[in-house]
Length: 238
Image 1 (cartoon, rainbow, N blue to C red):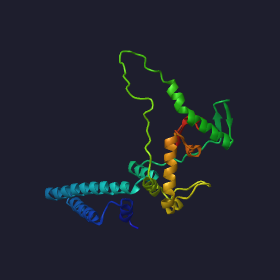
Image 2 (cartoon, helix red, strand yellow):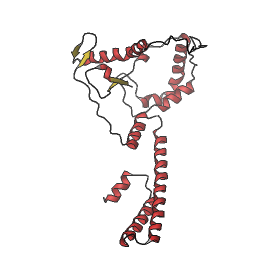
Image 3 (tube, helix red, strand yellow):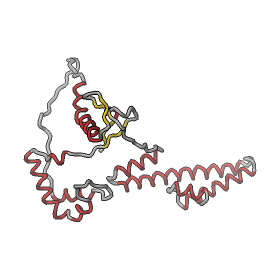
């Protein structure tokens, strides 16, 4: 594979028509070099072609990435991969620490289960600790009026059609846990399951309760580029 062919593979927005324009521009440039840039007419022709090629390349590249973003849909991993490609960002290889400092007893532990519990306790309580550390504004110079209600959070009941739409948006390429139902099975049974799921969700909304099994989430701790044995140097990622 030639260098030009490799370049075209790396830049898929360069179409065959654009490739022809680039070859014409390069031909004009070589002719300009042969005459040692003395011919003003040749230089004007080359400059006009160069500007045209650059303009067409910019338009083609923009349209290509717009279509790529539309193809991502709800796949956040694919979208972030595309963003990293655009920004030339290198994906970091996140490695986990061999030991983690327990803030309760200031001792290190290498037990995976204990390390997971330390992360869980930190992520669950970090928001409350930050809120408590903020000093409230007690100044009367700028009075703040509050006309809201304490109980204004409302969840509307759902319908089987909405449940089916959510199931259709699930990605089949995602791995599942040992006790979870594979996505392709859910999609095959969506017509039978959606009425019962909608009924369960509506019952939870009416009663104001939420099953504990649905409150669980798989969190991946991502290091912020700091000391790896401190849990406050990590951020949770779903």
